[in-house]
Image 1 (cartoon, helix red, strand yellow):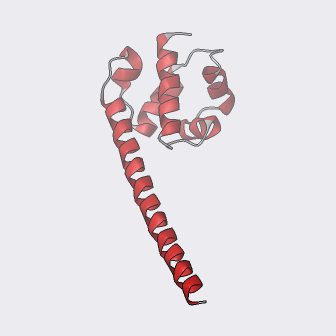
Image 2: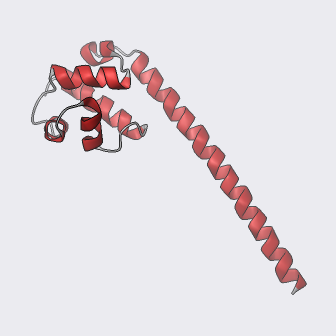
Length: 115
């Protein structure tokens, strides 16, 4: 497996963690290649070719310089920002859930004290 393929797999895994793709089939569909090709690449049985590389760069607005040379660029920064946004959303939703549960718990306590 060449370095280009390793970086392509790393990018796929980053997209997966960032919830930009649901799975390998979703990734393949979004970049217009067969799911079997992506499976072969992810299992390190074949090296990535120009079509999946080009389509992934275009569809996900990836840093081609990073994919081709390994030099970190905007790709990693963009994924970090999306992860931060996802974390902020999750934290906000969890706070709302906690407030809701605390409110319900307080009502139950009031009910049991009056009964």
